[in-house]
Length: 109
Image (tube, rainbow, N blue to C red):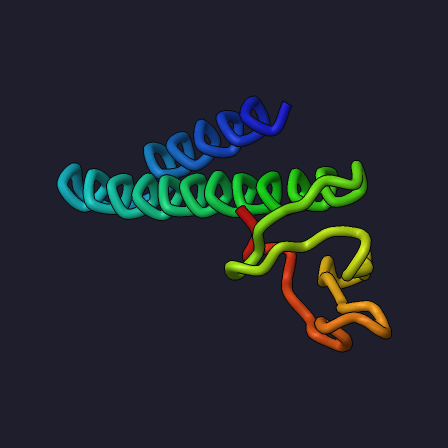
């Protein structure tokens, strides 16, 4: 649905560029290239951010399933760590060698 809305916005942009500007043909091409480049960068950043988020959520899901995961070269499991859902950080449990050690879930493999 968002792609359709994006296409509609782009179409309206091109219509406005065509009918309501005093730009010559070459200037319109330059504006179009700049706008499309910015949109491409936005889409690439969005895809990267989404893949990083999915990677982090996969790590927390495996942690919740009592599996051992690797984060920053450290083995993380429910025996030694708890998960802070608000920040997606693993915090070392009391009476373990990892007490108060904090590792972000975004660093997990």
